[in-house]
Amino acid sequence: MWVIIKRPRLFIVVLSGILFIPISVFALGLAPTAVDLSVIQGNQADQIFLLGNEKNVVKTFRIELIGIQFGSHADELSFLPISDDQKAWMTLTPSFATLEKGQVAEIALRIAPYAHVESGLYPVGIQVVEEASDNSGVNVESGVVALAFVTVGNDVQTSGELIDVSLSHTLLAKPITIHTTLRNTGAGMLQPQGTVQIKNLFGHVVEEFSLNEHARRIPPDQTRTFSQTWGMEEGDGFIKHIQYEIRQPAIGLFTIEMRTHFIEGDAEQMMTRHVFLFPWRFTLLFLTVVIVGFGVIRYTR
Image (cartoon, rainbow, N blue to C red; front, side, top):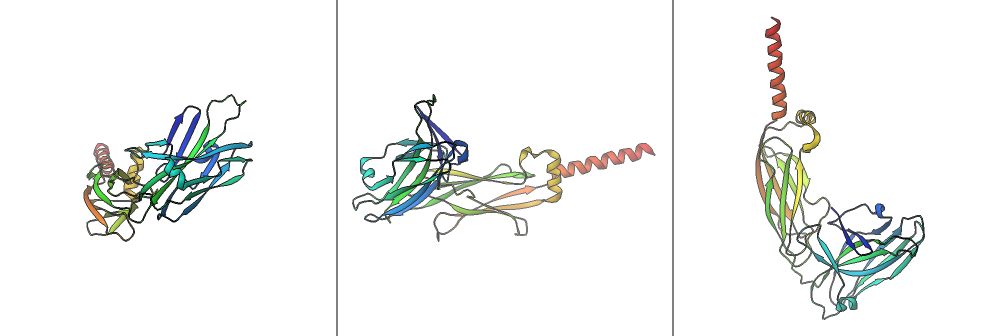
């Protein structure tokens, strides 16, 4: 998922563990796109970002640190200046970089909170904006933002809750979309882990999915839904669905078991749902062939 944010003379692409877009489309690259940093007051943490110029000409980039505010949905972000207090213990160097085609520069982020800095989560963005040339005739600047989720202190509560597991339908045939809703009930950023297992009537696992394949994050006090599809997508066509039902037969009662944990070593949270499957497309085709064949035989007698 990705989001583009427009301002006057500014065209920004946000890249993170929860937002994705190919960098090459915009001719400049910034990596990594998202990092998690933890530091205790009085210590420091450093992170290097790599900025690459993928254009055919020399370009100058403006580099600055900005604050981030999360919306209620995964693709909602707003940017704002960081406070003067944060500027005192968050530094980003250099402020400008002029790069030849294919050249790569290092951007250094240093987090060194003082003893009086309050424990908590401080999300910031490393904003890189291409400086527009005076004779370009273009009134738009392009840029990218990588995200840094900075946790200060070792007393920041990290916890989450498995809210619900819902299914697109519980009867007849695949595909079935499994929606898992999780909530961050702590004060730090969460990157939930877990699995979705499909078990047949005898308890054997017939398929397994990763809950958070793309390493999405959940901001504090927010809810996110993670989805997996069991079976072929709806748009793949009736005949292909029949072929799939022949190759991957599924009939009877199945249990969908969702297991997740939010912190390494934390106890798993689990929910189960049940679905009854019947290969109705193949059955319909089979009955049609039988009926037509029976009719032809009777007619030719």
